[in-house]
Amino acid sequence: MPVNNASMHEDLELIKNAALAAGEIALRHFGKDPEIWYKGQSRSPVTEADLEIDQYLHKTLLAARPDYGWLSEETKDNPERLTATRTFVVDPIDGTRAFIAATDQWCISIGIVENGRPIHGVLVAPVRKQVFLASTGQGATLNDVLYTQDNLPVINQPERVILPREVIDHVLPDYKQKVEQVDGARSLALRIVGLLEQNADGIFVRKNSRDWDMVAADLIITEAGYKLVDLELNDVVYNEIETRHGVLFATRPSYIPVMKTAFVG
Image (cartoon, rainbow, N blue to C red; front, top):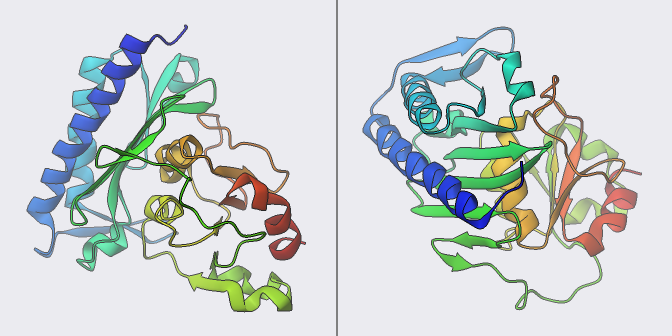
C-alpha cells in the first residue's frame, strides 16, 4: 500500500498525541513508588505505569487503526502482526529502571513499521520535556525544531563513543580514551537520539535489544542524517518473527568504516 502525504501526517499525529497522553499517565506514577514486578529469567522490571500505558496505547491506537499489527514489550506477541501492512511497535516506558529511580532518562516510544522499516516514530520524554518526531522523507524534529547537521563540527573520526560495559575489552587500545561506558539503566532510545544532541559521535547497542527499544529512535536519527546498522553494515529490519537483534551501532555515515574497524575489529 503506497504511503500518501495525508495518511503520513494523520499517522504521525495519531502516535504523537497517544505518546503525549501516555506521558501524562507515566507522570501520575513517577516518583510515587509504583508497584513493580520482575519478568522471567531476565528479571527486568515492569511497573504498574508500564502496564497502564500499554493498555491505553493498545486500545487507543488499534481503535484508530484496527488493521494495523501490534508489537509491544508489555503485550504477549501475536503473529498476526506479520501479515499486517503496517505495525505499531511500542515501548510503554523505555528505561523502566530509570523511571523507578525517578531520573529523567526514560521515554515513551512508538513507531510504525512497514516492509521491515519504520515510517513514523515518536519519542516523548516527559521529565525532560522533549518530543522527538520523524516520518520517512520528512526529516526529524525536537520540540518542532527541525534537526540539521549544518552546525556539526567537521572531524575525520568519532571522538566520543558510547559502549555497553561488557564489550569494553574488545576496543583497540588506541581508542579506549574515546569511550564512555554505560550500563542498561538509561533509555536506549534516548541514548541513540543523543547523537543528534551531540552527546556522542557514535553509540553501540548490545546484542538482544528488541524492536521496541529502537524503532522510533532509528527513524529519528536516520531522518537527521545518521545511520543505525548491524555489524555487516546493513539497515536494521523490524517486525520479523524474531524481534531480538545482534550488536548494532549508530553514527554518521562517514564514520561507519572507522567505527567498525576500531571498535569491532
